[in-house]
Length: 44
Image (cartoon, rainbow, N blue to C red; front, side, top):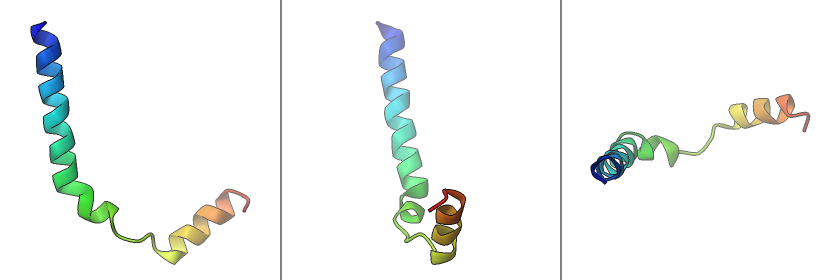
């Protein structure tokens, strides 16, 4: 089915582009202040 191949190609391209753009930011540690806020908002 041509549509399925197009969808798969787009999905692959999108994953590659998102990785290229954001992998370095996602590999950075979460700042302690943000962790504290998240724990406080979760009741923990």
